[in-house]
Every structure is written in structure tokens, then in C-alpha cells.
Image (cartoon, rainbow, N blue to C red; front, side):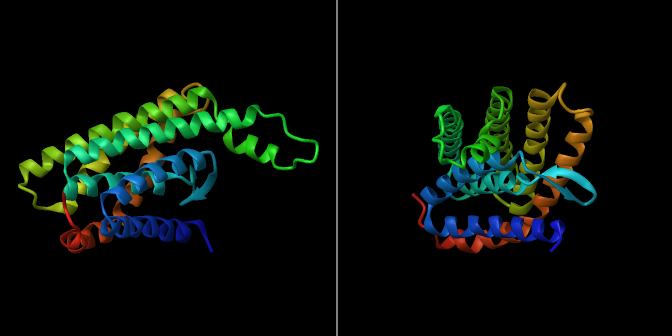
Length: 224
């Protein structure tokens, strides 16, 4: 099974997970935003070959979190979306700090897992800070653009609104994270930006079926 096929299945599974969360209600969607954001930070260090490029394996989680946020705003209002942003930011911060504290413990002589945890959790403070800043800025931007588009289009053209806000916000997210976290470390930050953003655009396209189906599930969901 090649990575391109896995990426498509991966993105579709996450996208359709947002539909089930929507069916459960706003609390499930908020929890999903936070969970996907934490997982994205955890798996961002894994590098894979995708379409001839070397990229991270976390972009599907990032787009899934944005999709969940937009569904919150579409079906439960802007205040709920803002609350989800701050809850998920707090959860990401706690997870990052907890991961660093976990590494402080001296492993027992019989422990065999510490090197694996160290490899997984030893992100530098710069990477952690860059990720948190990029997340907060891009999510607030996505919410603001989505709200503006919803007003301008009178709530119509839902797929266009979802995709447009995500595409713009993720450009900002990619630029901020790359320059704040990787500038001076990688050989060409612009190569990283272009490749990462292209993969995110592919993930956005794969969310379109879930966005379309959300109209029917949203009608069955009790709104506050």
C-alpha cells in the first residue's frame, strides 16, 4: 500500500469522523478539534514520501481540526467556535508541557520505552512555541474569514466558504510555523512552505464530501 493511497484514506476517515462528531453535538466537535490538534503536534515529526516530496504525516489532522471548527461555527455559532479555539489551545499547551515533564523522570534500569518517548516528545521549545502561535493565529483567522463569508453570502455556498477560509488560514499557519520554527534549520524554508501547503490543499479537497454531507446531518442536530 503506497503513501498516496494511505493519505487519501487517512484524510477521508478524519473528515467523516467530523460528521459523526457533528451528529453527537457541539461537545464532541470541540473535543475533536482539541484531539486532532494535539495529535497533529505529536506526529508532525514523522516524515514520509508523498508525491515525490518529503513531508510530515500530520497535515490531515490539521485540516480535520479546521473542518471541525468550521462545522462548529456553521451549526452552533461563532461564540462556540471561539470557545473551541481556546479550549484546544489550552489542551495543546498542557500536552506539550506534560510531554516535557515526562522526559524529566529518570527511567528505571528495566525500562525500555524511554528512548522511544524521548524521540517522540523531545521537540524543542522553539518548535512548540511556533506550533502554538501558528495554531492560535490561523484558527482565529479561519473563524473570522468564515464568519465574513457567511455574512456576505447569506449562508449559501457552504463548500466554497469552508474551503476558502481553510485555504487562506492554512497559508498563514504554514508560513508562521515554517519561519518561526524552522528558519535557519532547514536549507530552504520556501521549499518547505510550498510543499507543505500543497499537501494541505490536497487534504482540503478531500474534505468536500464530508462538507456536503454535513448539511443533512446538521439539520438533524439539536442546536442550542
